[in-house]
Length: 376
Image (cartoon, rainbow, N blue to C red; front, side, top):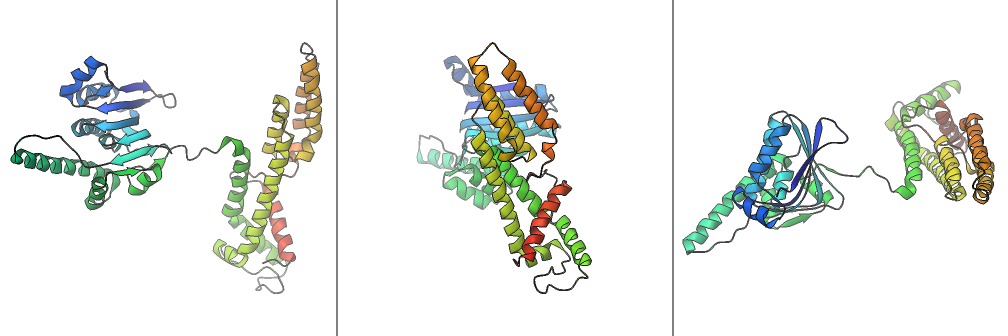
């Protein structure tokens, strides 16, 4: 009974998604697991099915305690051969990637782990019986098996064999962040997903910070124009703008000032979002108005009339379910609001490319006001 599951990717037509759940077993033991109905996989069967996807991109999600080192290396070799023939392999650690399963994980060009995934490496182990010479022979075999595992780890991580061997000696359990630090994983999955409850606030907060931090070249140009208009590039005297020739100098000369303006803007944005959230009663129409206001830079005062009207209309609709007049009225109200030109009202939302000239002027106006006020 195989424990993998090949299926076409929903995101990429030419890609295949593969999920591995269960133990890695040797080919000779496959019939036992199949007879008992236990999830398992052997390299030969895996390799045979993988061969039908030559040249395609494969995403392999792994959730396994491991199993046979030989089985892990066999599946690893099958995936590496897939890469050699022109296909791509990315691996994803789900809940656990341990022991021999870590070998399979190393086949990925990109190796991602979920935030809660546990990654564990350790020395190979075996049961042995017989004479002392048999025990010594088993120990020698285990040493060589460890060398093959180190070959795989070294190729994928770029770490020294001594460092990797020490991790195996200590039977090291790793969080996602540590696995990335040690080189076993390349990135954390879901790192770009923001908590739903603060989605709008965090998104807009960061957009403004990106504008203030990354668009300094445009601020610098504006400051130079201001200098020219005020009569030259003299050094700052009596709280006047000093000459700056690059972004680094601007940050050095006016770092506190720029930070103050930026923080004021972020605080204003946070207050705007909080005030809008306070208007949202959870109803579909009111939520739609509030979300539209957030996206277009409107304030709570800008949309309060529309929200109040929506709430009143919502009561009418609830008391007269057969009467659609209230809903039609609200749809018209929202449409009129969007077409009224209120979207052009001054707000603090800045597009991701910082391309809105009006927003730059607003930021610079605040900066100039602060300079004239004597902050530096």
